[in-house]
Length: 215
Length: 299
Image (tube, rainbow over all chains, first blue to last red; front, side, top):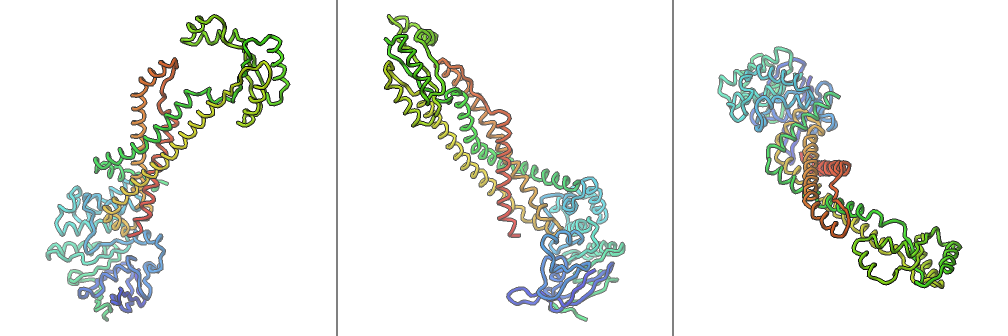
């Protein structure tokens, strides 16, 4: 599903975020990325989502070289990815339901079908009763779950999450982790960058240290 | 096809929502556009009305040949034969002095004056249609005829008609220039409004890109916004011109009737109105498109 072939990423003026990373994530796998702050976890996820391009090496997603994609082809790659960001990137000018509808509108799903799917996604993360709430009125855990609902509403084959349980209390963090485990169970490939690998006991744990993958 | 329609519907609803979200801003920009568009539109309407009122005036030029008051029947006939033999003359018609008198008597206010005169003051006359209506050919022909014996006076009827025509053409050019300038103004207004929108929607644009939105998906609501705003500006311009027409119709009719003319000020017809609306909508769309080209790159 994801292949890194000797990938390096250097940010100007010469700061190495990733150094010579080679890894392989198979379809349906659950992988956690651990490491200190600044170890390169976010950079690795950004390379998969083509938000950054590698300085050297190749990043393949579903056999496609992401770094060489034309800008016009990017949207279609991203529609097959579910992205949960560290800062969530919710839109605060619209309610929870409208936030989850956005990826479906982008994909051109007819409104009726889209509404049905959006409600199903909200139901999956336990927010169906809160669909009319504005994101600002949601708690931290609810905002995180809303971000997950938006990431999975398009039924992506690959779910990427950057610190989805940071800033959450232990119980809420466990609930959120549980949602990712559910998606893993139904065959979605899941890659989670997290401080707390213990939340995902059945995952294959990868560790980054100063941009290098630890054996 | 279905997805395409769905996406346009989505973009249209989004842009309508944005228009409604800031009603005062929307109203002010629509008013600014409406006034900018109403000026050339009103000017064009005025010119159309003038052209209509002076409808017959721009007919081909004619030369009036007035004979001496004491010209005999024989001299009159001789001049008729000479005209027929002149190559520069395409057609001519004789107006006997009696016909001229009865025609003038029918004109308001002149009957009493004419009745007070002892004799018929009008001479026999020929109205000549020249073959070539270039100015110098007309002048030449008029000079030639005025030298004939028995001819008292030659008048070139075309001069005032030509001046009027030139005046109308000048007016048209001025309105065209005004329309061009204010059209650029409308594009500039839209350009700036869309620029501000792109800046305020930065978050949404960024998130949409990450969720797999194509460039056209992101541009669409802004383009619809520009188009709708232009359309509403055009509607405002139409309403302003229409209201002005209604307000001026009475006074103009009164003025015309004082000159013995029957003239009604015409409002913009449906074809003209449709043309204006289409033009205004395209200007809005153009302004939005230019703005997006400039400011969407920075993401």
